[in-house]
Image (cartoon, rainbow over all chains, first blue to last red; front, side, top):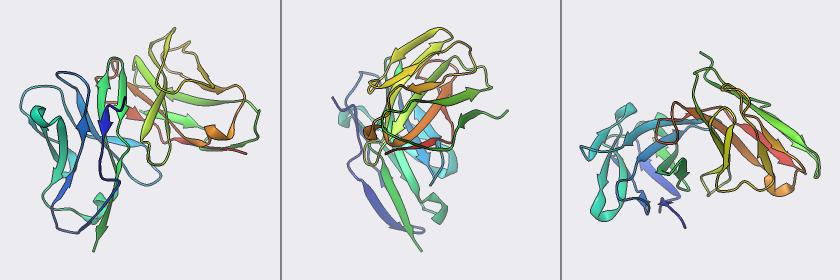
Amino acid sequence: AQSVTQPDIHITVSEGASLELRCNYSYGATPYLFWYVQSPGQGLQLLLKYFSGDTLVQGIKGFEAEFKRSQSSFNLRKPSVHWSDAAEYFCAVVRGNMLTFGGGTRLMVKP
Amino acid sequence: NAGVTQTPKFQVLKTGQSMTLQCAQDMNHEYMSWYRQDPGMGLRLIHYSVGAGITDQGEVPNGYNVSRSTTEDFPLRLLSAAPSQTSVYFCASSHDRGHETQYFGPGTRLLVL
């Protein structure tokens, strides 16, 4: 069963515009949730993670994400996108000893 | 620290050939894992290890073997390559299990003809 769903395969935003990438999960009462970013030809880098506590978590590069248990969501946001944010973004959830990834959202940034 | 290193960067195989993808980390991490990345499917876990001498299957283990004789190394073996194994392979490590931040290698791009 799919544990993590990222509904948007591609998103295009203008530089300076706000961004929200969606992530829905279907595992665990108290899930461990992550957002990773992959630049072209690179491995993945952690943006932020949620284990417990404050449901709004801050990450690197100005990103934040909000955990909403009632909606089973962990959406990633950024108030003002930069051209260098163009990349693929992956949401992930821990299942036992394994990390399960969503299918990814490719972000394109228009000048 | 070099972090997580993978070799080779790129490999072409013929169907039925075998090969080993190498992965090493110098961070003394206990947990290591192998993923494959295919378009639209994100990363899928192949095998993982929670420490030297201990390995387990992930979501898509068929056609792949692993071993973990040292903390540093976690090679992935393809015994008889198939075109369906054409993919980009990433190795990752973390201090402890899957709950911790995982550090990814740069990937190995494999083409099976």
